[in-house]
Every structure is written in structure tokens, then in C-alpha cells.
Length: 211
Image 1 (cartoon, rainbow, N blue to C red):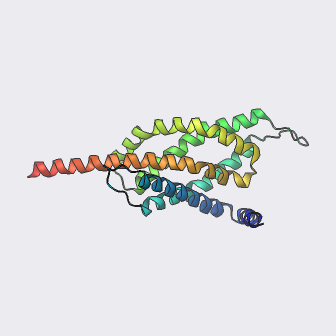
Image 2 (image 1 turned 120 degrees about the horizontal axis):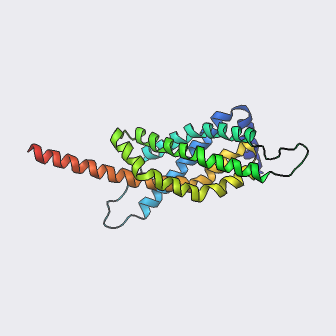
Image 3 (image 1 turned 180 degrees about the horizontal axis):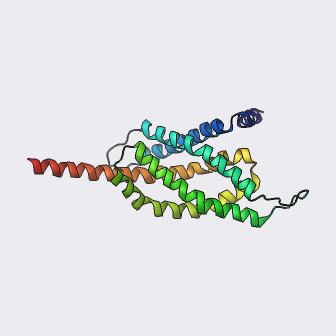
């Protein structure tokens, strides 16, 4: 009963305020994914590593990215719904596998690369990284992340586009994407650590040269 009430409340909110509903839902799920990632890092750090503390600003950045990208994803899903209707013949329940495949291909070849660019760029900006550090982030992470994306997401999106009603596609993908957010969070954190160590080393060298 409680679950049904929540579903009805979400449906009403989506019908009346689709963008704000998707933004809040997406931000919350993204933040939850990062929170899980940080807890994993805190509880599994090695004895020779410095103890980690929970970074609330990092979770806030993931929340902000989720809020920003989710309405865009909602509009993208509506475009795919119109451009590639699964039931092209009215009065039939047969699903066109060709249209479904085109939806998935379009999503993975267009939106997935764009989404990853937005993620890496916006995280770099919110972390106040220099343009050089943001370029390094793309060089170090983009290829690895997009290949990992293409191993995971085509099947998830095929299920999403085939079975989920339009209002629930973004929440479904973001619920599945909590594992993906966990991966991106760990990947981004490792790059942050590398860049911070490099910057600290450069500052030490600069100070040594000055003295």
C-alpha cells in the first residue's frame, strides 16, 4: 500500500512538474550512489593509506550534477519516444525490435558520450580544477569510462525502453545507474587523488627552488 501511494505521488508530481520531479529524483539517486562509493572507500582503505573522511561537498557535487542532467535525460527520452515508436502500427501490441534497437543505438552513440563529457567537465569545474587538469581528466578517464559504459548500459537501456513507461525511464536508469555512479565516483576520486598529489609535488619543488 505504501509503495502504491509513493508511485501515485510520483506520477502526480511528474504530470504536474516533470522537470523539477526528475531533477530532485536524479539528484537524490546520484547523491546516494556517491555516498555508497565513499562508504566503500572509507571501509576498505589499506593500512598504509591515510584514513579517509566523508566528503559532503563531493556528494553535493553529485547531487548537483544529477539535478542538472535528469531533466535533459527526460527530454531525450521523449525525443526517442517520438522518433522511434515501438508500436508503429496502431491497434497492434507487437513491438518493433528494429525501433527498439535504434533507440538503444541512438542513446549509446549520441547521449552516452555527451553525458560523459558533461560529467567530467562539470565535476572538474565544480572542484575548481584548472583547464589543464580538466584536459588531463578527459585524457586519463574518458576512453576507459565510455568503454565500460558500452559494456553495461545497452542491455539496461533495452529493458528500460521496452518495459518502462515514459515517466519512469529516468528514475529506472538512475536506479540502475547507482552502480554506474559508484564506478564513476571511484574513478573520479582516484583521478582527484592523483592530481592533488601531482600539484603538491609541484608546490614542494617550487618552494625548494625558491629557497
